[in-house]
Image (cartoon, one colour):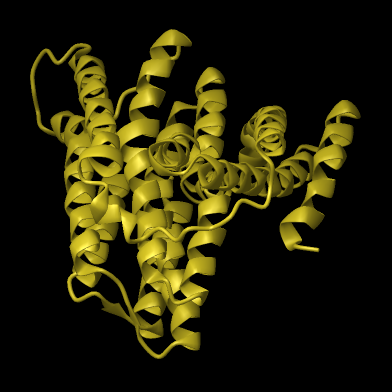
Length: 347
């Protein structure tokens, strides 16, 4: 039995602990372990449906549900007014995907294969889009740091405008990858037969989504208590813990592909997830904040801006030659750990 299937036991455990008003730390840990398999099941169900429908519909399903777990946690946190934690988790997700997940994938794959190769064309396409996405999402932050008199609520309005434009880029990217230029991506796909029936896959996806919403509500509800008990900041909890938990399914997938010597798919998973965070999840969070009465902008702290920029820059540099090894992976992981330590000490 797979580890993720074993972790499903934490779902009833978390519900029981919540009903009995257990200690916040215990509830936090239990809900964290329950979210991991639920995110994995959502990803598995989405993959099965993509195999069943294939082509454009399959790609659209992957694009829609790729970061569903992250989005659910973000929306629940916004509803509780944890805006700084949400921003940290958005930045942390991008950093985690690019440095930690991609780094671990290259490291583990490199231990099995002396050198691994991936498409420089596709990696370059993703890297360019990633750099544009980063610059776009960070524009409100740059506006914030530049001294301007009588700014008023301009930062909020700028964030809303940027969010709408970022979503339009995301929609255009779907059309580009699934319709007008699908041939660029088709070669990365392998025809696989679905192991689940359509109804079973839909049922698993629906049940996992509902369960994830319930467990995530418990998880988010304990964050403030745990932060106070252990002296942790929202920057560390959001940027490291929440970010890693919310993207658990992508993490496992990227490592699995690296072990199969398919670095193209690992690159697509890690960079693609980061793009979806920047172009879809973050803008939706801003617009959802308005609807929920918890206004949120895209103004990040200097530490978050620098960390994200460094991550994008490093991955862009590594992608230029289309080759990687375990040492490059180790460097990415160590860079991530340095950022994690920084987030821990920033108060």
